[in-house]
Length: 138
Image (cartoon, rainbow, N blue to C red):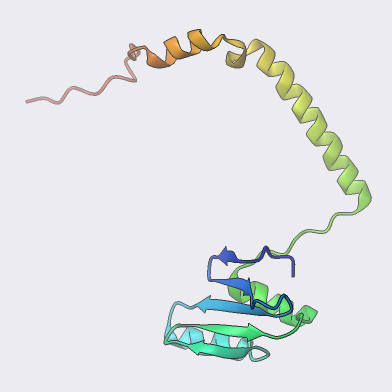
């Protein structure tokens, strides 16, 4: 699994156990029933803390592909997309083109305005009628 150590996720978190070879999963469920079914799905882990709708489970070895899929689903981890060399090159070229286009747009846009003029624009009182507060009838 390619998850950052100590990653907090939507439905739990995963951390190293401390030995660098095993992990602890914190799982928070929406109900006690959901927690029961989640424990069944994670039967390959050892339960270390048992709560009503949440708990901690110890994963003692690298998960198999099937186990990793269950962990990703339970914790809400999106699987990392693996791109081929042709797709990587295409995306790099696209990013380079977009960066060059943005750079040429900034030369004529507001980013080329001197800082003192930018500050004056930001500090000015809004005179546009859409920026005014509506008057409240009394």
